[in-house]
Length: 519
Image (cartoon, rainbow, N blue to C red; front, side, top):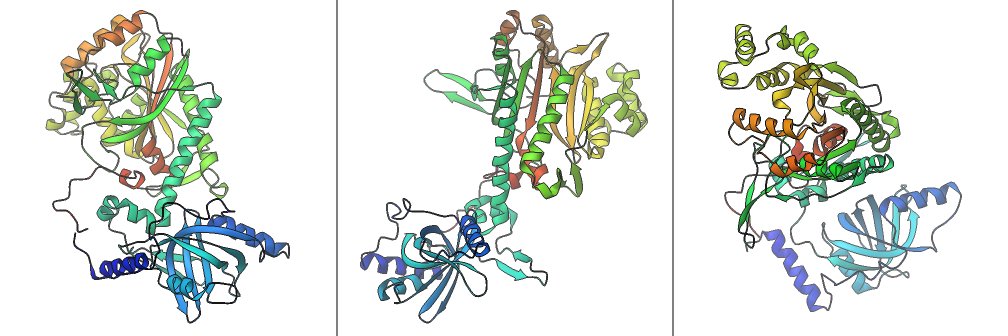
């Protein structure tokens, strides 16, 4: 291992601590069973005490966190200590019933990044800083590598602007532990993410849904048009696939009389990486017996509005910022037929060109898509290309596009009297697709035929394989069912105003570094 000069200095401190009988990585906290307070709780307690002319000087508490600032002034020392909720000040001095000389000397030697715990009384300094008067303290972990130091600037209006010293995106994603440690706004993204998932669960549970778990390793992948990751089970001596969707397993549960089910978990797709795609991502899917696409549309709107009320601050009034737009989650969602949306944006009524060749000819005549883009694509894929190039980016406010081509919707029921169109909708926000839903196909014979058709028309590696067991499940009967899928990561992007999915994943997929870093 190679170390920088600063790291070598800190290693020398570590050895001096051990030589003096102080363990720099103790087994456990000594103060955790005392009255422990988080930084935000300290601030609230002090504010309440001041408002009520009360004092906390004789009320001993314990506080733990990471040292993020230090100022030494002779016989007094001030440390800024941060936990997940915020930052407060530790104040210590030698003597005066505070710290003895040895303890104070070690206190002054603490480095930025060290974790400590301390106990004492709370007070507010003359400058209004919430503080802990330290009477005892202990090192919990010695930081050998120094954290990048952010610069804070106080503006005339009292607000604080923070300039991070750790802002390179590639480095932030590779060393997320540092990113989280030095950038509070990044920590807040993942706090918000947890709140979003909790709110979704609360909503679905209140509607009588049962949360379930289905296999991640599957003998047959399905439920989406995507390439899978393949692995091998040694004991069974067979290849297995990381799931690309929960869909076919969840609908098996509908067959088994579990009438409302949902799952929140990881899916894996062996595809490209972009601002909205990661090879592994978090998905919500739910299925409800006796519902159709329109029922699911209502339920999805209600769910997203519930999440907005639970997660966004009251001052936001149900609005979030995303990709330069203000998104109003609480207004009624727009509902537009796909045919009308494409006609408005391109002048093409694709329903008037019911076969692949006639639609391709019209699209090429109008120069809407390049020849190599549509070469060999089935009718529905050409329609999908028009959505991506001309419609999706215009759908800023929450919008449901509905009634999709049959040949790109192998699990959705056709509209009566219109076999080429199915009851399917997709939801869009800020010009990005968010969710997908169907009136689920429950005819086992038609479902098997759809599997076969898709295999013939599919691009390489992007077909749903024929799942005979799923067809067999449908043979036992599945009632009319509404199904829904939504990318959690994209929803978090929309609620936290992030342009890249990497910003809302703790550990996004990255290319392997060409050479290892030191340490």
